[in-house]
Each structure stands twice: as C-alpha cells, then as structure tokens.
Length: 441
Image (tube, rainbow, N blue to C red; front, side, top):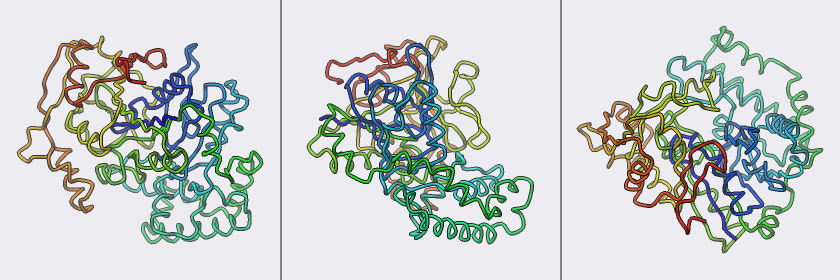
C-alpha cells in the first residue's frame, strides 16, 4: 500500500484540499486520515460541476463515493462544528457521510470554555493579535501539554458522569485563570459576550445534549478500525492542516500554531497501522506566498491586489489574507523542517496570466545571515525565537524577476527546491492538476 502525506510548505492555504481530492481520485485511495490540526482547517474542494465545500474536519476526499475519514489522535475535534459540517454535506448529496467517519478515542475535544478562553485572550491582545482562528484549538492543546487531568478526549463523550465532572473542572479552572489575568476587564464590551460562557450554569448540560448525536452515530472508534481500513485500501492519503511555517516548534513565535504541522504524526500512524507501506511525502506550495493573519511575510506586496479570488476570506479573528512574492528562503527552510519531500505540487499557476512579471526572493539583504540562522530556529528558546521573528519581520528581500511564463517560473521553483515539480495546478478543481513526471504517481 502507498501512503501519501500532504504537507503545506508555507503558512497554510496552499491548496491541500485540492491536492488531497486529486490524490484520492488518482490513486483510488479508500481513506483520508487527518493527522494534525483541528476544526480551524479550511480546505476547499470544487467539483467538476461547480459544487464547492470547505472541509474542516471531514477529509477532503469525501466527495468521492465510499472514501472514509479517520480523525487521528493528533486531531483536536470540535464536536458541534463536526455535526454541522456533516449535516451540510448531507444536504449536498452525501447522505452516508456520517457512516464514513471515525474518531480516535484519544483525540482531544474542544469545549465551549476552551473556545471562549481562546477568544478572550486574543481580544485582549488588541492590535497585537497572534492570528488565532478563535476556535479553541490552541487552548485545548495547551491544557494537554500542561498535563491538566480534566482534558476531554473523544472516548469520554459516551461517559456522561465523567464528562460533567471534567466540564465543571474546566469551567472553574479557566474562569479563575482568566480572572487572575484580566480582573474586571472581562466585563468590558470587547470580551463580555465570551465571558458570559462561564456564567451560564446550564451550559455543560446543554452542550452535552447538543453533541449527543456523536455517541448515537457511533463516531468514536472503539476498535482498531484504521488498521482494517488500511488493509482493504490500495492507498491512503494523510491530509495535513495549516502549514509547516506555522508549526508549534518551527513556526515563528508568537505567530505560530500550538499543533505539530510536520509530517511526523502521519509517519507514526503509517508505521502503527500500515507497516511496510511506501511513504510518499507530497509538498504543496503556491507559486507565490500567502498568509492569513498577522506575522512575518518578508515578500509581502500589494501588486496582487484585485488579482486573486479566495474561498478563504477576511474574518474577524485572522483578519485579511496577505500575499507576497515566492520566498525561496522560507521555502527552503520548510523543506529542511520536513526533511524533504518526494513529490512537489505548485498551485495557483492560473494567476500568472494576470501578471507581466513574476518575482522570487533568493535571499534577504539584511546584514545578518538570517537564512543560515533559521536552520537552528526550532531548537531556540522562546526569547531567542521571538528575537528572530522580529528580525524576519524586518528582513528586506532581494528579488530576481522573470517574465510571467509558466515554464520559466516552474524552472525557477525547481531550482529553488532542488527537485522537479510533479504537479502543476492551474485552477481550483482536480482536473486542473497536470502530472508533469511519469513517476509522480
């Protein structure tokens, strides 16, 4: 069996949903495994006839009949949002969608208290926001890393007494922590609505009632069903969330994720559930740089203004989508972090016909050797990381310009990567993907 691991080599939004859908169709994969991240994902898939869905917790191969989704223990699950997404997919014609998904019992569960605490902290940062999606993923992961005994996992959802005890503990603990941090400021206009979550005595019971369908639908895997699915599949696609440049260790603090965005979780899952399988890492990058929300983007430019139409748009939490020219420094750093990839997909090439010139940043013109120093970034202390983040935000890119011709641009990216581009993507649908190598699949 072949295991394809889809990895975003940027800050997210590279086109992982499209590539996952394409790989499922090309390889006849029977399973999509979500190996990291959580409900904040926004992976867009557009069907040939135009039907569109932004996948958050269901696998992006779900439009293909019979393809299953497995939410691994590396996922952070938002139960209410999962049920809503499933209902939306049912309305779009996927009547069996809930029978095609299973959740590892060790997957962390986001509660309303985590989401509210996450939002209060982000609101309190005012103009210094970190770019949180406001879903509660980071707050949930932080509790787990701190060893909090009241962390809720998917396997707890069928245990109402335990669930009530944990909910009460989370509420009390987070309410006190927020009060200690912000005092009376929590009743201010900006945070009042989120603070109300902690003041509702019946919220835990209402939340449990609302997600009772999770148990009724038997969504939590009490067996080792992923191993069974792997044995009956010609291929599996492991769908990553976010991007390597947002990774908990390798991302640029404090504008990074709490989750592991590297392929490590996926590789472990393959070894545990499909030992002996061929692992193929698929790196995905736009032909330019994109970032949704604040944080370093050295090649940021307004030259793309009005040229790009996004499914993921400005929102109240992350703010605007920002664009920059192709950044070889960060691209090479991402490749180092993931220890290289086997196949490379370059997306959004359909933008090129709107440009006269395309630019690539080979290096920065700052006095310090930032590109070299980046290689040590994941092992630095938080203070050192924050210093390097500031340095990156002040970096001045040196550009090399090309006529906006696809063949020349792909050569430039291949030179940057030190490997061929396997998939060229010129649109939002799977049929817009061109296989450029005979051995790509």
